[in-house]
Length: 163
Image 1 (cartoon, rainbow, N blue to C red):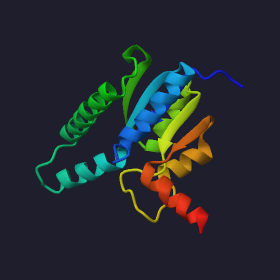
Image 2 (image 1 turned 180 degrees about the horizontal axis):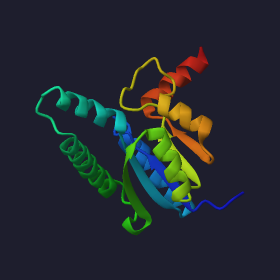
Image 3 (image 1 turned 45 degrees about the horizontal axis):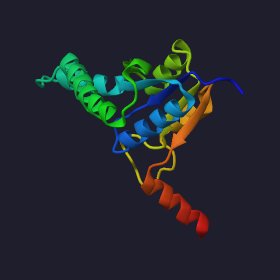
């Protein structure tokens, strides 16, 4: 088996973010690996803000990016302080673009060995088993992906199996 040196955790800042981050940090701690925390600001959202701005509404695409990055960074710093993972072994990266493309690029440029991600993003639709980003990542990723299950999803899946 190949040595695992870097684990990337992909965060969509859903209600499961803390659990996903904690799971990735525990795995990195156990394997003595570095942790790369990746968050992608979706280009599609930025384009929507720019379209609204072009219609004459008082919104600003750059301010939107700054606000999202600031909110995510503040929330992430709070979570990182709670999980007690060494800061010298943690890298935080915010990118702008298509989440799938950007995560795959980071996987290569950062020499990632494993990706940890949730099965659902921000939409958190109850009837969707795997979100579109997770599904496409599973199909296209050149490295192993560990899919995190939050306690509620885990229970729901267990009940389906027991039927």
